[in-house]
Length: 225
Image: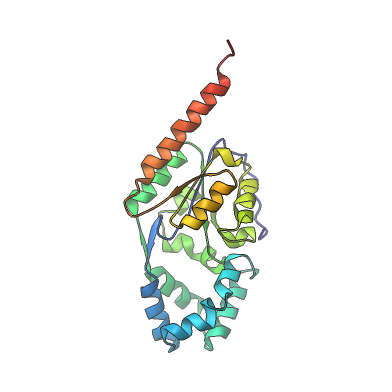
């Protein structure tokens, strides 16, 4: 599982959030345009060299042991030197924080632990705190990419390993993602998962989950007549 170790006590509730199109707006066209300009490859050639043959998906599933190995493989695929700072600048320029959605994370943090669970590789994991500076104060050490867990969404293993890492059962876990297939996979392992669309009130979804958990806890604690 990427060598990550969680030594903090398990919380009662866990809130997991995807990143792109949930907490930040990610414009892949901006990224591809900048990569094309930097490498000299057209869009279709960029896709062929890295994405279409599954290299990015493998990175998200933990194939590369660290960010340096990822960058070396990416540069080899591009056929040119790609400095880490330039790779990070291009990716980061395509991202814009979504304050109302990030406010939902603040609300969730009042009721349990918040963790990121984004389909990304180890190099992205190194840079998320710089791309989205509002996230580190909220997530702390839990800015996880799926590569940390050796699987990627929608594989059920990534959810199972994230639950084990945080020490919280599925029935006490909330998950928000913009991809229906990922939401369905999370529900398949028992997680309360919410599909985030353009008009989704994520804060309201978080509070509804908290209220449901409080009712469940009260029912369990109530004496039997």
